[in-house]
Length: 392
Image (cartoon, rainbow, N blue to C red):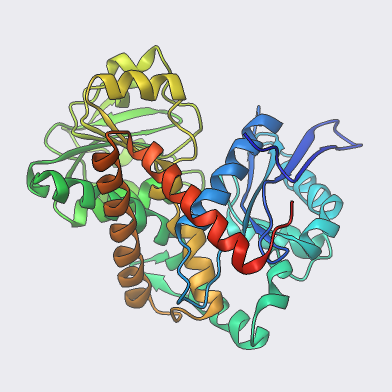
């Protein structure tokens, strides 16, 4: 495996906590990848996420589009986002990384951090924007920035468009897999781990497509109902961290242990919270036919191998949860406007095509969807490098 282009470890001089930045690759001198904050975050974790971002960018390469994929990067801070010191730590981290953010790294919300919080901290750290490194690549910076700001201001049924686009992509990948297998939506049951931005939006789109969500898990445990949960009510009662108010539960809803989502009687599992959620041991509890990776790196490699041997298909994160990042750039570069219907239509079309390409390649090669996606990336990276040059 090729080492990353840049790997940094930062130690906060006030708390002693550490933050990380890994730039896996640059394209046109710029990389893209969110910033996460969680207790226990490591450099190896961030490096794996940065490699994943390189793949996500390459998978969305379209030579006819205005959006040209960037390189992959990722940032991480080892701190519980609920810690009273978390925000000040975030500001100091961004201040320390300011030369990178001004020159070659664009970032945004990720696990533990909302975009509003990142924007506020970036301004306090003296940055114009958390994505200002991409501005020199824009034909009309003022128009592009206004279009993206307008898109972030769009509200859909009480939820910001930016909080829905990723889940729309996850749901469309799952629906494409069902269509390919000839499985009707109405007969499909879903369990979701994590009801934050990505998990909540995924649950909403799958429910509206006719699937039944029978279990959701948050930090307090799993909520289950074999007859189906009232997803809209659960979403309406979440706090800022995706925790559901148990007072909103109906008589048929049961409260179960936090890991009960793994063994839920469901056809699709959607891990949408932390990395490394499914390992070699707990994978044996899974009864689902598909695992749709809304989170980054939720299924460990040894677990995926065992699941594949049991006939469980893992739809990988590098495809499934790539719509949020792509939507930012489609909007900024002008492939789509600041409109929800246009955004959802573009996401559905792009994610369905990408998922179908991956699954067809997996079937033709007799391999897993992840291996097939990696093959597509391996085909596209040299094409991108030949067009824009290499930065290694």
